[in-house]
Amino acid sequence: MISNKMVSLLFAFICVHLWKNKKTGHIAAYSLIVYGLLCFTSAQAANDRAFFWQVTSPDNGASVYLLGSIHFADKSFYPLRTEIEDAFRQSDALVVELNIEKLDPNAYNRIVAEKGRYTDGKTIRDVLSKETWLQLQQRLKQMKLSYDAVKHYKPGILVLTLTSVQLMQMGFDPALGIDMHFLALATQQKKKIIELETLEQQLDLFLDIPDADLLLKETLYSMDESEQMMVDMISYWKSGNEKQMNQLLFEDAINDYPEFAKIYDSLFYQRNRKMTEKINAMLKQGGSYFVVVGAGHLLGARGVVRLLGGRGYDVVRR
Image (tube, rainbow, N blue to C red; front, top):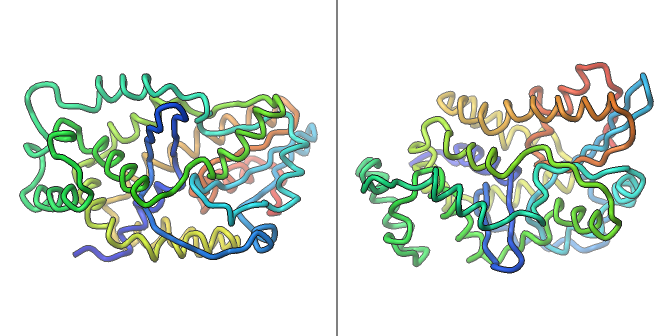
């Protein structure tokens, strides 16, 4: 059995992507399914420290606010700190990884059909070891899912499917996620919304991920160990404990499992560099931007916060 430190790789997915189509109820998630029934009151929520920075250009006074999101939440996360809400209102535009309110489920289904399914008669069973195949059978039975419904999925898409289904079964509502909160406000206020990535780019992360079979194996192992990890993650987010969150998501797993370095590089570090380039361009252009991305993208020596600081901008934790 894998150490629960291995779960940190999968928990990092929580800080990536989650979207729900309001009409169909379909959910696609790049997240580990987790369970954490925490009893925080609204009064406590207003005092949460979260992960929030202000980046300012000394050349033209342009500013970017960076907020680390958890893409699902409950009512205990709100209201957010007045300082955060005020920064949003004062910003010219909202910047997100994806505008998940505008995503087309048909586009998702088309990409999965074209890239995420075996079309040559092969099934997922044909590419798995005996051990992983037995684990998959057990997990499908526990989740009351039919193998026939998923047998043509490639490993990366199967990871997304299993985790999103379990999320729905546990009753989490992505409509209460931090990014959804600000997307709804931006729409109401007719504020400009800027996307850092596309749906296809994000799906390609899992379709092209190094050693996707290993990722599926670890997903199956880790789903049983998620509750305590989620308790810790939300605690660190609410208290703003950057050191502990970074250790939980990155340091322990990479130190203990160096073979996962390529997966981390694909899911986080390469994307962090690309996000930094786009945010840098905004700062050069001038104005004020409110950026909401998965919390994992902001943390550590290779996170967006540190990368922007290295370009000479003034960076202040708020």
